Structure formats: C-alpha cells, structure tokens
Image 1 (cartoon, rainbow, N blue to C red):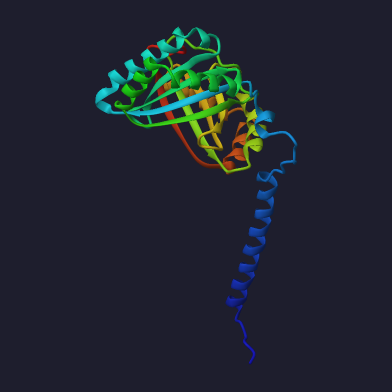
Image 2 (image 1 turned 180 degrees about the vertical axis):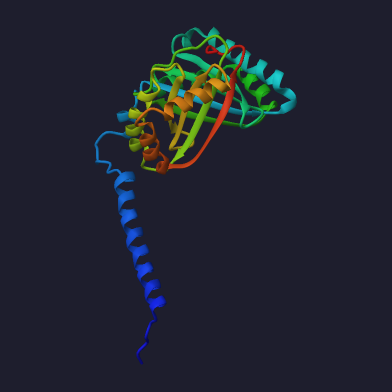
Length: 270
C-alpha cells in the first residue's frame, strides 16, 4: 500500500533532515573545540604539573557556631606549638588561616606547607602521634568541631609564587571537581589563562589534590574587597583570549563552588 505525503508533510520531513544534519555538524564542530588528545607518557601527571618536593596540606574544619572563639584559640595554640618544635623549623610552616565569610558558614581553612615532601609529613605525623601536648590540643579541637577534612595538595608550577599579603584583604577560594583524566588538559589551559591575570596581585595560589578528594583543584585569589574583586574579574573578561580559556576548561568540570574568606589574626598572610 502506497502512502502519499502532502506538501506540508514533505516540509516537515525536510525540516527534520535539516535539523539532524545541522545537529551533527554542530556536534562535530564542538568536538574539535572541546576534545583534547592527551598523549601517553611515562611520567606521572603530578610530576609534569608540579614540584613534588613541597607538599601543602589544606585543613577544612566545620566548627560549632557557639564555640568560634574557643576554636580559633585552639588553632592558634596549635600553630604556636608547631613553631616551638626545633625539629620542624624551616620545614613545616603555616601559609594562611581563614574563616569563611560567604559560602559554607562556620567553616575555617588552614593551609600548611611541608618542605621536604611526604618524607617531612611522615616525620611530622610521627612527632605529633607521640606528643602529649599536641594530643591534648587535638582532643580539645575534637570537642569544638562538627566535621574535619584534610587534603594533601601540590602547587601548579605555572602559578605565581605564593607571597604573604598585607594589610587586611579578603580571599576567594574557587574549588573545582574535575572529570577523572582531565588534569593535564586543565593545566595546559590554565598555564595560558593565568597570563591574563598574573600582572595583578590577586593570584595567591593554585593547587591540585594528591591525597583526599581526588581530581580537586583549588584556586585562591586575594582582593582588597568585594568591589575590587568585581572590577578585577570584569577586567579579565575584557582581555582577548580569556573567554577562550574558560570555554576550554568548563567542559572538564563536574562541580565547582567558591567561598569568600577572611584571615584570622594569626594568619601569616593578611
């Protein structure tokens, strides 16, 4: 039995064919932009992206709202204890200490630097596991917090050197959860993207995780205030090439969030 289509039906079929063809062309075009071929290598990705002789630890603590002062005093005493240990001098240093102002409320982040890699971290853990004074500080802290998380991080080699800031500033930590296998591609694109902002003083630190939640990236930016942050970010979007770098990295992200932080009184960077 033959089926005859009217003029209107023929137009529908033609439109569907056009849509199908257009969609296929668009998909092919997008794949050329967003898909990057990562060549096989005998070197680990972390070795290609960073210096493994320096490890950073990022402590994230959710403290109880009613004990903020006691919690911060506990961390201050812990920092002073580390400074007092002769065997840790010049090898374990606090880089920054912040409380979250916008984002996850009642949260604090502490960034430590271990010069000497995981060997130095092993040495630190051996010392703290057998020290009664440190154990008391840890037990006290356990009564003041609701949750804790620790990550060991490596600094991206293309990021500017970490320098302490003063006077008082605000900090933004932008945290990204990437698709597994995309860290090299992220690094390749951000090695170009950072050039659009490295002449400004806001690029504080850039890390990727080694132990803890994996395929995590943290970019920490420093601003005079929220309005300065707005002006700086708008200026970056006016730079030719910045939008292209963003377009290449967005498809690599599974999840992202930002937090605005303020330094504690005892933070080395203000």
